[in-house]
Length: 209
Image 1 (tube, rainbow, N blue to C red):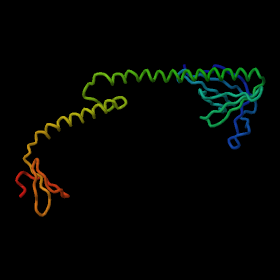
Image 2: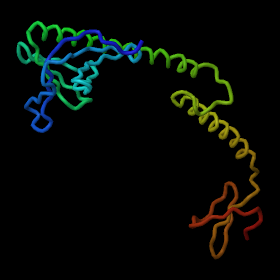
Image 3: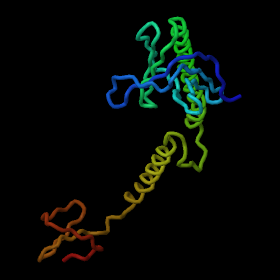
Image 4: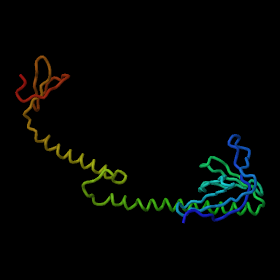
């Protein structure tokens, strides 16, 4: 379906002076058509105005924008994306009010569209998160959601390593003696004691004198 105009009016178009940020600079020599467009594909609303073939307004409406009436026939809004402030001078208060009403209407529509898009993203991601907490099928891949499976794999590896290490330590027979490096080596056996020296070396039984 693409983008199409949904409301149009005529007004003199201005932009704030980028140097002073105070004075208005006219961007059209006469009143031009200013239209609201709706893009059904991307679900966005834009204000577009052309002076001949030149786009003098191309502003995407976002939920945080505000249209302000500064007089009976003049209104303005700031566009942070375009880094400017647009101003419109209308021929009557009625035309200004109608444009302001449509601005608020499409602003609310943009907010609802954004909220629905966020809800859709959350609903899409929820099944994947739930499946990650179910029965684990091996082998696990590191691409799993939120790193949940990575942590579980690391825990399994750590647990298995510890469980394998314990029998080896307990099965070691006490057939070794630890010799302390000194000019006169001394040995100790289980239940014995010796002087504490800076270095220790593990030698087979019978190494010490």
